[in-house]
Image (cartoon, rainbow, N blue to C red; front, side, top):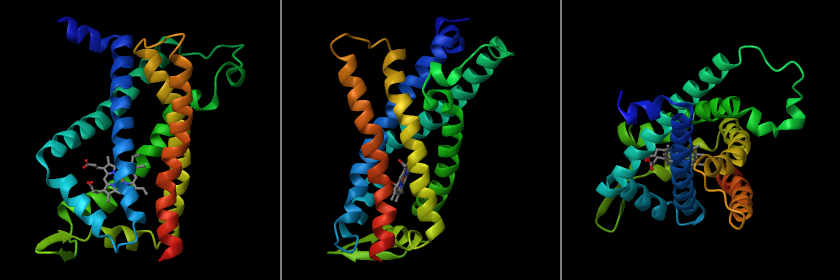
Length: 226
Ligand code: HEM
């Protein structure tokens, strides 16, 4: 067995994969939420549609997209492998465990939170991403160039109350998932430092509120202004 295979099969190796894919997904979310802020521009979707075309056709961005898909799939597979390993190592729970006093709720429920986010992601990708790539999207012309009117798809989708509710509730769960994941990833990577760890923790706490809140504000804004 090569050292790579050995590392990937060890608990530490699996935790490293979770941390690295998690941090990459945090980067993706930062870019995704920033780009989607164009939905607020009030220009009928022009800037958002131009941005969406760039994001789906630029070769460099395509590489980032493939890395995102690999990270999502890797993060899911390794979370299952790790939880199976943990269960096998401790088939009976600690008799005297007072879990609620030992760890935060989010850290004890990362699997449940992750599963809810996965369900959200399936609905999300089916509604927007699959439509953008393979569905029928009306075209719009700016200057001489034609663009897919993804803004129209997003605006129409967020007229549905159930979908707005699903997005807002899911962003709450995303916040909890990130609140543990952010700090935990840095800890796994051994980036613990007397001076920097409190700053990383603080950035994580701000991030896990600001980013999900910004995502949640988009369907709410469209619903109440359309
Ligand atoms: C209101 C919030 C959101 C809106 C309006 C939105 C909008 C979109 C749109 C229009 C696309 C298709 C265009 C493209 O492929 O770039 C897309 C793709 C995607 N979204 Fe979102 N999104 C939101 C939140 C989220 C969240 C919270 C996640 C993850 C938890 C997420 C994950 C993704 C992924 C993985 C893709 C595929 C990206 C790629 O192909 O590179 N989105 N989103």
